[in-house]
Image (cartoon, rainbow, N blue to C red; front, side, top):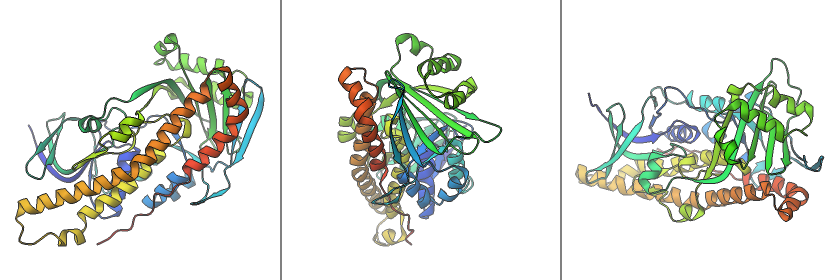
Length: 421
């Protein structure tokens, strides 16, 4: 039997982007409903490098302290060439940028999602809610979201945080994300006792691949490898045991005390996926927002992981969107709506304010995300290029440049959330 719900704001997707946007709105006194197609919080990728800009956002959300307590702060980036067999650079993460002290941790995705979800009002997340259609209705262009279970939801605002295959992004006119040609293998190992690793981001470069190993906490180690697979390797991508063997062949010359964590990783804790991105001209010309609909996070800007900024930028998006959108729902704003207006007039007036707020968000986020996305894509090409000149640049010049770039792009503050009445 079909049921109809009515909401002010509907967010599609309970990943990092969706939960952060919902909590940011909640902090500003605006409620939202988050739709999640799975039956529980969805985790892909195990962990993410969480840079200074992300910590600014997490602090604005009020969950920074709990996540700091659960994760070790990384002190240094150390880069080693497995071709040359030597360390090529090191960079301290303990400096200070324009926006304060540098802060880098490898955060387990499950813990980040739980930290945000745990402070949302009960009932904010509706699980088993797969969106199958989006329709428009009436003078105020109310959106009707149709779910697979027959439920329909009328909403004044629709926010797509539904990832790389976003239904909302498709509705806005975005094409499917493009394939970079590269894949990533991710894994993690939890040990019974202390793993004994120093708090460092350990980068390794080899012929046509880049790998990284770093601790999340005293017992958990996260690792990854990106490379351009052959057609045969692509066919094995869904076989974790084969992917583990591939990684171990490539990182054969990695120090044994580091490589052991990959060797001991259970195949069920290994995930392989293609790396996708959105073309810069789509980001430049596409509809990040249209009327009362917009996109956030991977639905907006899927990007290669070479700057480690995908999740961090999603957190920034959520804070900035919530700040603008809260203006359209604030009591101060509503007082400016003429009392003599009928319901139709009030609805049209609020639609205009919502449209304006989403346009401001799109304008502010467009160039920041183009910058990060394009830089990540170009870096990926250079980091794994096999051309002789590219390889020389990668091994001799790039490590210091990359390390500095990682810090420069993360030296950003999305600002705080201050509720207005």
